[in-house]
Image (cartoon, rainbow, N blue to C red; front, side):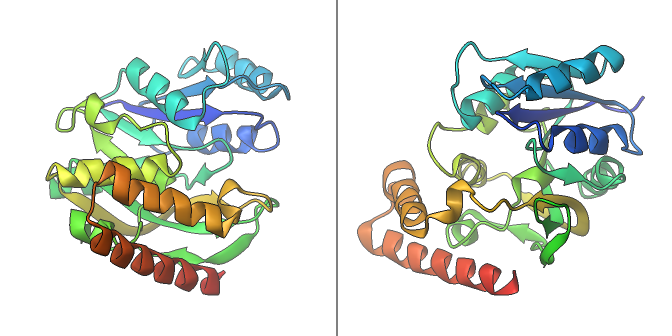
Length: 252
């Protein structure tokens, strides 16, 4: 029997893109999945759109936070409610290629991977390609991950029989996904990259990460407060992270 994949999708005022996101999951060639959409206090009617899909497709579940709590809390809420062996993350404005789940599961079984991530492309608000495909390494260690984050959240899949749910809980800080990947890598889990383009990351004009100085502060906080790196190493990692960011922007 095919193992179930639990898809976690946080939602906050995402009515413009949530239908495309849901439809990309429904279009999967692999059918044994559940999609947990966690409404984080939406006021634009996006939750009502999800509700209509949930009524028509029992694999889709709409969960609600009592108040607006942020993306990390929402993902953790969904993680606690999963019933599948595997967990995957998909934000409410990103989309998957139809073969994403099937191809990635085959890769994980063939390589006996507990944690995997794939390449993806970058699209704009209209769904047009905005940047070349983001390639991924075959594997990444904790030390390499400190120097930059090549792991797109929308491509991550983890085996919950190998990695405990608690290990995947995200801290309520900016760059929460990157902080989580560091935590997983630090525990020694092999993090394997699958070099196939299986998703589309949507870049919006006014994204949170647009303020570069603010982003630097978030990154420094992870290095010093979460990872507790010595000053010299945190500074070195921050420079490397910045160089990688410049290279990405040049490709856009």
